[in-house]
Image (cartoon, rainbow over all chains, first blue to last red; front, side, top):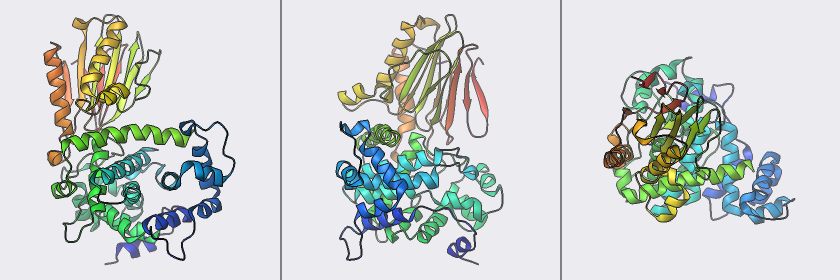
Length: 281
Length: 170
């Protein structure tokens, strides 16, 4: 049987993200800049849509500058490197995830809201636990469900919706029973085709079922718990509903108690407004 | 959230997550989407056709700042703001019809992330403490819900991906 990578390669058109963004992600995941890494500002300048997003945020009311930033250099100095990466990633994922994902019952913008909430939740969980880089966690949270974009291309018309809406067992198990793969495996293969670093490919792969301590990485636990928090908040839920399980060991490893959890949920909701406000400004 | 001060504009009103809204009729609809473990609560006075909807996320604030910044995020602060707002628009407490939807759970009952259950328990406690009866409830399960209140008819409706249910009138 063909591997998922081979199946994806056989498709005429795959969901895509801008090249500039994969370069930024790669910079983010290799914090000890190698000789070949290119400065973030240079990557941004080369992509006009990304430059426009950065300028928009730099001139947003939220930052409170009186004079407008007219150059990318000025914008970057106002926004800061970390924020820049998030803008770039949000921009890219909006291009890929902003539309409807009909097979999963997600209307225009719903997958994107789920991606953004997951990104912010992962970032907060990484901060609270102190176990992984919040920027990498943001990226993992943002991209965790990209597999849903390609599922409809790999299975017969209407197949996804049928499998999701019938039965009460966990969604990924039903997907595997029906086709031999689930949306986390497809997402990982898509991430590989985009050239994402291994740790993010694996975070996508394990976002519903993180492996135990020996094989795991705190990033997988963070992205998994962020996915759960996003569902609890009601973002990005389609035909699959909340038919997933929380991995209790994952929660234990992050040492999250009810107090931490509720603070993270409240923060995510408040930061959704901030983030969307700065994007729209 | 930042706009969680109740609004009284005529026409239809969409209420976001951690938000609330009130309307003075005689017509118009208040609705909210994406109720996961959150709870949506509608109140309606059929005589004066005043209604409101709260979409809260958590049982109670951890700090005073949280409560001030976003009262509609929490059951404790959201309920009192909602009731006060509809009473200010002419509703009478004893005439209010209260319906509730949401509080969904993960398949393993959230394995410790028991937000839906805690949200529901806090609501029950607050209503009981204040002597306010609950007319209809559609909570639990694994579905995400939408909730709406039509002021013209008083109809309260819940919509999931697969079906629509009328909570009131029954």
